[in-house]
Length: 209
Image 1: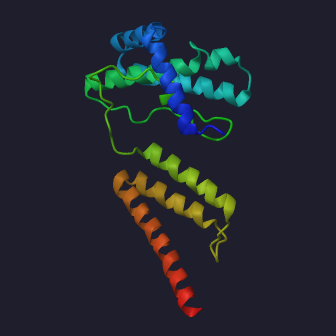
Image 2 (image 1 turned 180 degrees about the vertical axis):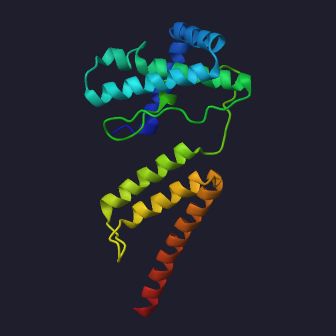
Image 3 (image 1 turned 90 degrees about the vertical axis):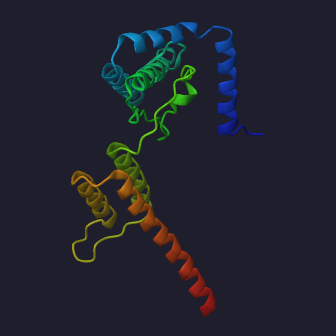
C-alpha cells in the first residue's frame, strides 16, 4: 500500500538518527556549532535568509544540480544547519527566531526544514513566540488565494473583490499597530460565526422540510 507522509517522515527521522549515531553527521554538527560560536544571531539570521533566497531562485528556475541542493552537503542541509545555529544563538542571547525563512516547493507546499535538521543540542530549547505580522499576512494571503480561486464575491456597488477588501482591512489594522494575537483571535471568532451560521441554516432547512 501507499506510504503516508507521516510514515515517510518517521522513516527519515529513524534513518537520520541511525546515521547520527554512526557519526556520519559529525562534520555538519561541528560546522553548525562553529557557526553558532563565531557568528552573532543577526548574522546567522541574515545568512539563513540569503541561503533560502538562493534555494528559491534555483528551484524557480530549475537550473541546478540535485546534489548541490539536496545532497548531504547541499544548500538545503546548509539552510537547516544555519537555522539551527541561529536558534542556538538566539537561546544563548535570550532572543527568539520565530520568522524562519520560507522555501516554496514546485507543488506549492513549503519546505519542512525539520526533515533536514540534526536537532538542537541537549539543553537548548527553541523559544516560542506569538505569531508575527509577516507570518499572519502570509497565512491570510494563502487562504485568501484559495478562496478567490473557488468563488468570486463582489461589492454590489463598486464591483471590488470582497475578499481583497477584507485583506486590505487586515493590513491596515496591522499597520496601525493592532496586536497580532488579538487580530488573529478576532478573525478566528469571525470564522467561528460563519461555521455556526452554516449549521443554523442547515437546521432551519431541516425544520422546513
